[in-house]
Length: 341
Image (cartoon, rainbow, N blue to C red; front, side, top):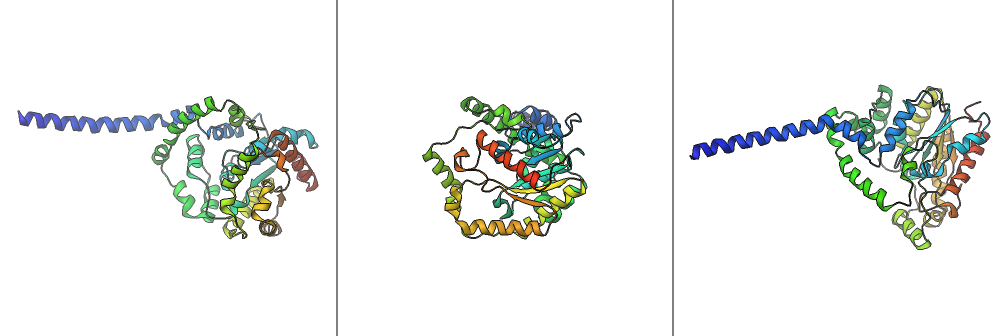
C-alpha cells in the first residue's frame, strides 16, 4: 500500500511539473497576442510604430520627447503656421528620454526632413540610457534595432544597453509580464480619472494633451517640492557621455538626410528660484558647447513658457502648448529649419 502511495505521489509531482511547464509554454506562446491587446501606459508605442509604417501619412517633421512634449507641442498648429504646410507628427511618449527617442530614428520614413528632439537638462547627468521596460514594449510590438542603432548605442553606453539588446526572444517575452499588472491599473485609472482624455494621450499623433486641470497653489508647491527641492543643487555635473550621444544623434539624422535640432525642455519658472541662476548658466554653457562642436542647432526653450501655463511641476496646459508651438515656429523660421526648404 505504501509503495502504491509513493508511486501515486511521484506521478502527481511529475504531472504537476508537466502542467507548470505546459502553462509557461502556453503563456509564452500567447504573450505577444496578450501584450498587443492589453491596455497599458506604453500602448502609445505601438500606435507610433504603426504610424511610421503608414505610407499614406508622409510626415515631413517629427517632435520627440517625454510627456512634457506630448502635452506641450501641437504639430497641427506648427503645420498651419509654416510655409508649405509641412505635416508634422508628435512622437513623444511618457518618460521618453533622448536615448529612447533614438530607437525610433531608424523607422522614420524618408519623407521626414526635420527631427525636433527635446531633452531635459537632467538627462545629461548620470548614467541613464534606454530603459528596459520601454524597450521591452517596443520589442513586443515588433520593433527590432538595426545594426547601426545597436552599435551606436552600445559604443556610447556599453553594457547598460548591450545587455538589453542581447536578451533572447524568450527573455523579452518573460520580461513583458509587467503588462498584466499595468492592464489592471490602467482600467482602474481610466474609471477614476474620468477628467483626463486618455484616448488622446494614447492615439493622437499631433497633440496628445490629456486635458489635465491646473493644480491648486498648494498642490503646485508640493509638486515642485517633490520634483526639485529634494535635488537642490548649484552645480551641473553633465557627462561627456551624454554630449557624445547628442552629437551622434545629430550625425545620424544628417546621415538619414534630415535636419536636426536639440531642444531644452520648458522648465517651470519657480525652478529658477530653487536652483538659482548659476545652475542655469552652467546648463546653457554645456549645451552651447555641444552646439559649437556639432552641425546642428540647440534651441533653448527653458524660459519659453510662463508659470501660468503649467498644470503641474512639469506639464503644460493647452493654452501653454499654443505658446510653445508658436515659439517653435519662430525658431524653425529663424534657423531655416523648415523641412519644405
